[in-house]
Image 1 (tube, rainbow, N blue to C red):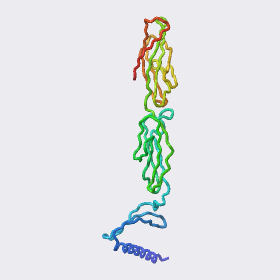
Image 2: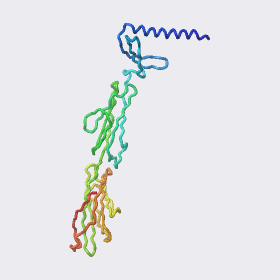
Image 3: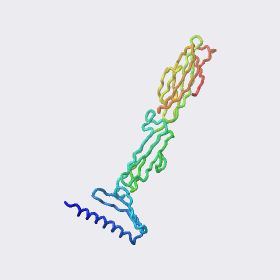
Length: 274
C-alpha cells in the first residue's frame, strides 16, 4: 500500500490547524480561557492565552480534565498521635502528646481542616497540636475541599493525660522497750489529683518488704523490728494509676529509749524528698 498519499493528507491537516489558530489571533485582545481538550487516549484540562501583540498562543497544562463541578466527594481526614498509643498505665498518656491531622481529596484538593479541642472554639488547623495539660481531653475534626464539599465531622476522639507525680509523705510510730526492742510501724500518706493513687511499696535498705494497694491516702507497713547492727534506710515509693511515681526516704528512725513502757506509741515525722 502506498503511504505517500496518507502522509500528504496529514501534513495538510497540520498546516490547516496552524493557519486556523493564527487567524483567531488577529483582531482579538489578550484573553485567558480554560477548556477541555479531548483525544482518543486521554482527556486533559489546559489554559490557553492569546497574545495579540506577540502574535502567538500559549497553553498551560492544568492536570486531569475533571471540573470542580464534577467533584461531589468530600475529603477524608486522618488523625495521628505521637506517642501512637497511651504510654502509661490504664490508657493514660504520661508525656506530651503531638496530634497531626492530614486530609486527602482526589479531585479539587483540600481547602482547609477545622478541629474542636475540648471546650474551645472551632479552629482552622495549621500545624500539629501539642497537648501538655493534665486532664481528660477530646477532639473532633473535619475537612473542606476546594469544591466546597464538607466532610462529616469525625467521631469524638477521647484521650487522657497525667504527667504529674503523686505526693508522698512518710512517718512512723514505735512500740516496745529497751529490753525487748522497738518495733516500728511506717505510714505513707499519698495523694494524686489526676489519675488517682494505685499503690505504695515499702523498702528496707533497698529490699522490697511490702506492697500496699488501694486509693489511700494512708498506706501502712509494720510492725517491723530492724536489726541493730546496720544503718536503717526506709523508702516508700508511691505510684498513681497512670504509672507516675515519686518516693521519700527515712534514714535511721529512732525512738525515745528513756520511756520504759512496753506499749508506748510515739509519732516522729522525718521526710526527705528525693
